[in-house]
Amino acid sequence: MENLIEVKLKVDKKIVIETLSRVGIANKKEKVLYPSCYLYEKDDKNYIVHFKRLFLLEKENAYDNICEEDILRRNAIIYCLKQWNLIDVDESTIEPHNKFIFVLSHAKKSDWSIEHKYNINRLRQQEEEGEPT
Image (tube, rainbow, N blue to C red; front, side, top):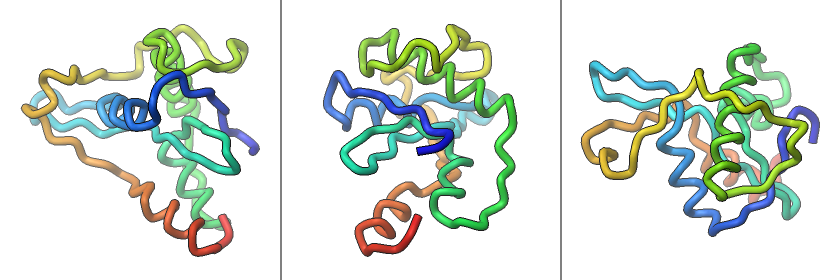
């Protein structure tokens, strides 16, 4: 699939999904975290996808506003997941760079609000119902 980074899960997918929910952009003053990426499953393959790319998967003519910083952030998140031994990925697709992301520790999760900018369950439901992506 074009512009998607395929990964191999080394742990249960629920762990990867939960970890991704704690990585992204933070408003530290308000204690709000906006996750940047999601685990997307298609044809028995797993991908780490920036939420803006998911809008394009959901609707063919969606507005494409993904920028270079979004791609760097996605790659940094993938790099972290690999370093944490949660996934395996082709090394040539990622950069060892985490300057663009915030990681909320699991211990502090209850002190923060996590606000998703994309509902991946909607995309999963469309695919289950046979709607094109």
